[in-house]
Image (cartoon, rainbow, N blue to C red; front, side, top):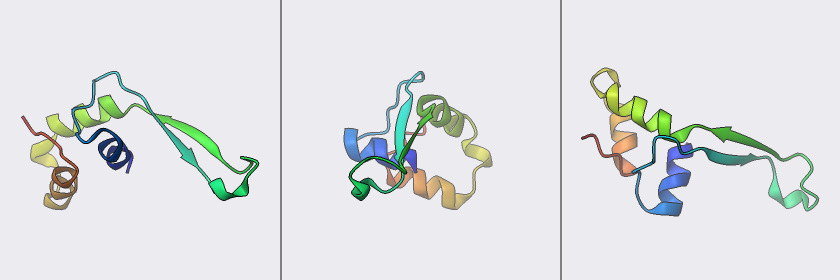
Length: 73
């Protein structure tokens, strides 16, 4: 989960609305970087949307997000 990556790095989940998180997908042990690809995710917009849809999220999703520091208000 991209939110987890942000939380582990920053220590919070107060993501600015326009923040874009870059993920590296693939095996970093290849050494030459081949087989890895980068993917950008509009994490700030996603977090904002999750907050606004909190009432319709499953209890499991609410728990997952709360575990990584989601502030619901």
